[in-house]
Structures are given as C-alpha cells and as structure tokens.
Image (spheres, one colour):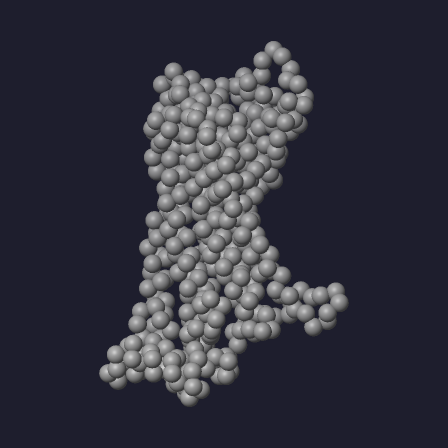
Length: 445
C-alpha cells in the first residue's frame, strides 16, 4: 500500500531503490507517527472532518497501536512503503473507511517532519540524561581523587603539576558546554511543522495551534515553506550536538588509553574491564576506550556527511532527505552506547598515587620556583632567567609544594560552581511539560 497509489504498478527495481532502508528505519518512528495521528484526528474532529463517534474509534485504535509499537515494536510490512502507510493500513483494516480519513490535511512530508521532531526530542532527552549521569560520575571522581597529583602535559612534554581532580572535572565542565549546545538544538526542534502538508499548506481550516499544544511543542513553525525547510536543518543541528559530545568523549577516551599504557601508568582498571592478547600473556588492553575513541572520531565526521547530503538543494521537499535517516539514526544510537559504556567503565578507574615523586617529573615544579621568586619581590622575567639557569647547570631543586588557590586550579576545583552551571542549563529543557502533554494525548477520555 502506498499513500500515493494510482492506477499503475511501480517497477519493482525502482521501488526497491527508492524505498531503500526506510522500512527498517521507520520502525524508530512508529510510536511518534501514531502520536502525530492522535493529535491530528482530534484537530480534524474540531474542524468537522471527523465525527465524535469516529474520533472515539480512531483514538481507541491508535492507542492500541501505540501500546504495541512501544512494547513489542512495529515493523513496516512488505508492500508498505513507510510507517505512515503501515499505520493507515492497520487503521483501515480495523475500522474500514474511517481509517482512510486520517490523511486529510496532511502530506507524508509534514507527517515525517513531525515524526522526526517528536523522535529527536525523545532522543535528546535520553542523550542528556546519559550525559548527566556521566557528569555526576566525573564530579564524584574529581572530589574523590582531588589530592592525587598528576603530570600535566603540553606538546606531549611534561609541563606542570595537575591532579586527577583537575582532570576529571575538566571533562565534567566540557559536558556543560555540550549540554548548552543540545539545549539550543532542542529549542529549534521543539516547533510544530504539522499542517504544513507538502510545504505549501492546505485549503482545510486546520487548527495548527491545537496540534502544537496537544503534542507539547513550544510553538509552531508558522511559515509552511519554512516548516518544510526544517528537513535537513534539524538533522544538521543534531549532527553538531552529536559531534560536539563525541569530541569530548573521544578526547577522554584518548587520555585513558595513554594513561593506562605502561610508559605512563597513571591509571589502571580491573582485569575484567580489559582484554588480552592471543600470544602475549601479559597484555591487558584498553579495548573499550580504543573503540570509544574510534567511534567518537567517526561521529565527529557526521556534520560533513549531513551537509553534503543537503548541499545545493533549493526549498521544498526532495527525496535526498530520505538518506538523512541512514546517517542520523545510527549516530544517535552510537552516541548513547558510548555514553552508557563510559558510565559503566569510568567509575572503576584507579588513579596511581605519588606519581610526581618520580625524578623524571622534577622539572614540573619549575614554574612553582619562578612564582616563589616573584612572590619574594623579583620581576617575573628575572625569576624566569634564574630558574632557567639552575635547570641548565643542574643545580635546580624543585620545591614540590603546590600553592594553587585561584578558581579552577588544583587547590580550588570549584566543583559546586561547575555543578550549579550544569543545573542552570538542565532546568531549561521542558521535558516534564512535554511528557505531560504526551500523557494527556494518550489518556482515555
């Protein structure tokens, strides 16, 4: 069944190529397509295209389909082109001609737009919840290990003293930046395109504000051409969020891989979180973090992939957009997997203690020596020359006492301030309001 079916039969090779992976990927959209239809039929009843009796039957059937889609999953059967066709077919099979009425005032173009935005909202909520778990883990580890010093590096050269508290909380605050980006993406996506039809509206007196409220959107996309241009733009913005968070996670994974190697030995993990070698019995490989690094590197290429799929397209709908699902859906799942495995593995990290007692790190304290001379009254440049001379002639004796007290330094991590920054941004997501709107939509009268 095709919603555009006419009197001729489409060539099978053409159909297979144009449908592509839509049947498989549309399984992700099934619950959201049903929710969109629930809102749409209520609105059609208000404007007189569906009777109250028909509405009651449609609502009951759609709620049963929603329960099936969320609990068991829903597949797009062979012969069906997409999830929109599948849902309408199931309604028509159960209710007869009443099921055929639900498409009035809609195009598959605005159906998929609203499905995607509902789905993306839900995915962003899941992603940010996982980010929040990782954020809390990082802050806990920072507090737990704040007094364990760690060599800090620039140019791969030992540079200045750092600490595990500083290292862990650096990634916590990086997630704050990522959360701010996700909030902006959510605010753009949380606008209702339903009623834009094929991108030029409809001659029915649709009540688009009604469906906006029913689906929990913040506002509607007023201009119908603009609403249609959201296809591709939403995915592009999502790709930035995915890539930005992947960059944070990938850098963290790269640090871990370096820190657990024998030449560094800053960190270790329980044996059961590592893998072995088929010929080297001593090996304990950090495969989880290597795969994290690789997956996150791959995800950082997503914005380029999305922009290339949509580059040069004029306004209006184009079938090119179909391929965006193949890029963005798996990327969202991979990002959630990366966050989940980090949430599982990272709390098992075991920092090494007394690292800076090793002689190879004696020059880490050269800046401490320079600063001490400055505190005693010498100009900085003169103090720098004095300590540099001591290092050159082998007479430098490191002070090995850390006196960092300013905000965000080793001695003043500002963990409560970082937590407060996260909470301020997290409160800006209207997840509760959206969830309540969806609960109301699914609730029986």
